[in-house]
Length: 316
Image (cartoon, rainbow, N blue to C red; front, side, top):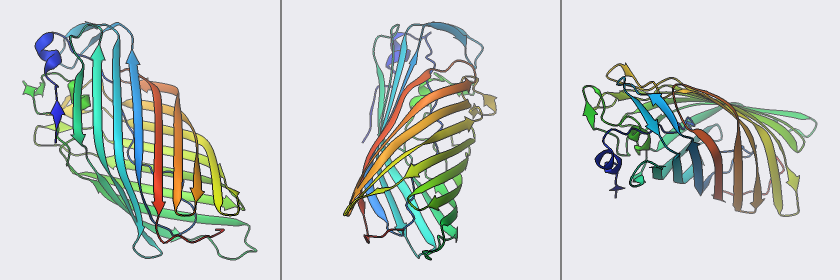
């Protein structure tokens, strides 16, 4: 089901184009504990962008003045992780999106809601953590590949091989293309402390409207500590996340207000109690280098709850 008022701004102010924020996250599902329990859960992921009054250029060569702009991107996500064998893990998500954009110079808020593009990734464990008690440092290395599926609706209103409103493109629920994902995840653990690194790359392809989202790269590292109780585990973590994306294009015309890089400070915690775990993650923008004019990401966080399958009370 889809509820949309994407054309409100175009009808009310036909000469106004809004510059949106850019979300470059590919796919990340938190710290991987060194066990072999699958899970299924729900996440709330929210990003809030804000931009001051400005005059900037658009891909069609026009220039526009804007008032105060705000963009709120919310995803409600069904996440899962299953072990097909001890060495092969399957993970993914199914998002429902609620994207909003407003401006002090626009008559109404533009909003788009519905199912977004899901992804599924298969990972193979190349290096497994040692089960020997005398081994102090335990290593785990997984490599994965997967696909992002074109399930969400995408923007189709083109004019002279360019979007009629290039910034409403950022409110589309999906990209309309099958995209390839590659992932590497490495974890080093010493007793109850550890370091996890995660690198993902997404190769995006062209949809039927000629739109191609820029290829994306995510890299992050997090230090974590597991404080164990009798029947629970509390795991805080802190780290950094780097995101990079090249500019989007439509029919080989570059959209100049897309792409760039962000660096975030990352901290949060996960609490495990038998088969249930609760998760929180906050990301603070530290620096950015974005192409053209794009709004600053003022707030970004994730809340989640998981039900752990095949639960075993393990000290791994």
